[in-house]
Length: 362
Image (tube, rainbow, N blue to C red; front, side, top):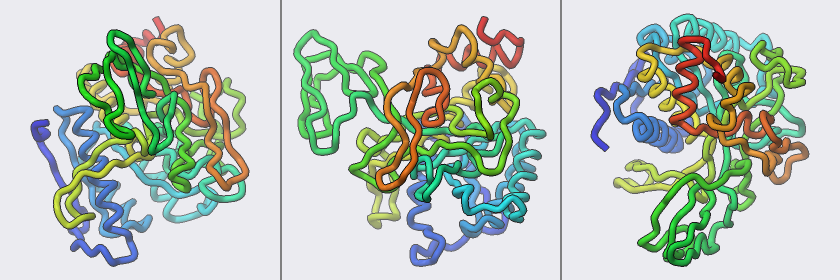
């Protein structure tokens, strides 16, 4: 892909010197950074991209970096591929309150907020269900994870498809002849022809850290847009995107191996930047920032266009192996995948019509 129109690295308190041995996990964050930048760009190649760098991974420093970005870039789309289990956050926590002030200011500035729902199931690795913050904040669009359906375990053949027939490889369908050159890789010619199917992201082979988050909030009440779903508190996710590791995305990174290399990665961290790119495309289609979109998305999902705007995920659950609780996918909204994954062209058209003209579901 050509470079984005502009790519800015913003370090509000100065760009830190890279040190892979410090306690803030900079080496791991380079993978996260590469994933977010590259796949936001892949989905919206004409969008300007700003990479916001905090001085450390602590809450205070992330909040300070985000506050400056919110001030400098009103009307933008902000993707956050990180989170903290609510079970370790207290309602009077200073970090939480500063983040909340940031998100309120961002919404007032017309910024669309997104965050990953997490990769450790419904409990975030604890003994009871709890959501991940900032995905759980009501002004944030929380993005959960899916995997292909059917899903094949790593190391098994992916596909064998006879000539002039159509077969499913999970996320996509193909026209044969094609077969697995080796597990996970298809032999050419193998022509992709359309969407396949999805289920809840839950890959025990890679556990822990291989199951989509999704659970009721321990902190925030039910927002108005979630009324009618029978919820006791704000519950995530709102929407989902492919998060599978086996079936994941290739990122280029030069820090892990010491030279430029490709790595296959997954997680709900892949969904937040790609949903952010979808929102950038929606802003482009609308000719202006759409800002807070959760209410419009829920209105669309309750309307007659739901089946054409979303792929409804109805199979699987988000109980991570070794944990006691998980939630199953069901028809319509559920706290494993939200409303499901987007049929992007239809979704953007209907979302823009809904926000600009109140034509939701017409």
